[in-house]
Length: 382
Ligand code: SF4
Image (cartoon, rainbow, N blue to C red):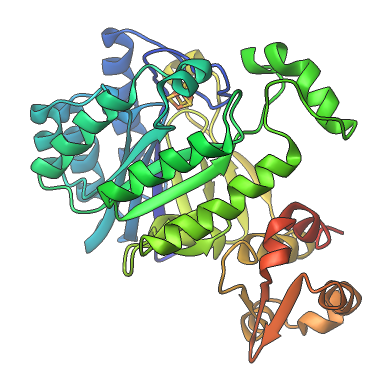
């Protein structure tokens, strides 16, 4: 492997949001400091360190990486710079939560090399934020956003969510308007999924069951409302100069997230930190998700060999998430078979149902196909 993106996991949050099933937990300063030391140890001693691997993008995700101090982020980044060939124009993203950054910390993050900030807002409506169990208000988000601009961040993503409890189409539109008016370079807009095992699931179990039975839920938006919110997202963002380049991601010209595009195009990546995954092109690796084990035992990631069948499926369901879709020639080059040979029947059926279209070398989802993307993408799993 000559080149790989890098993902670094920071598993700390101030408080757990009610809907969250990510690998994160509240922990004190001491644990955070020890974790950063362990992370640095892992990076330095990785089998990939000091091999001249070229790194085009880095993503510090979590959790809440902005709970780490500027000094801690700098020590992590310096370790990467020393052990890998980090590209001069490397896109280096860090996730941040409103209310966890200060002028000083933002300045230090910039100096450490962070050049893209991804801020988790989710909603501009304080009642909705409260229902989600978020730690911040919209006003606190605004303060953090403006501080980031003042400190020179010229590439900012804002995360939004729809289909929230008590959310109305009108409040969602207000969120879209408010956020677009701030002109971030990138907006991610996902629908809330109520995951089993979260406090949310217990609260809205009845709603989820009603949705599954095709009945109107009590407080979650109905399927119809959810669909309208999804359609609004594209229409509003288009009006404000954003283009969609993936099912849930929108950007101003030139600001698509290179790191995430790498995932959808199956570019190799290295994962460092608790529970982090990596992908070499043929092998998927995964670090332990057990904090004590990660901190105390030798870090030996689990390895799973991706066979051709799984690789083909990934190629399709990841590639089709992007508006540009997939290249038939790239399929042939990678798998030494034509796409028609493998998916001929599925492709004909989906074309007939106007869910996908073919243009020159590319196959992509139609607008209707994007509306029901879960159904379409599942068709490529064999
Ligand atoms: S801030 Fe993000 S990672 Fe942390 S608990 Fe909330 S949703 Fe989960």
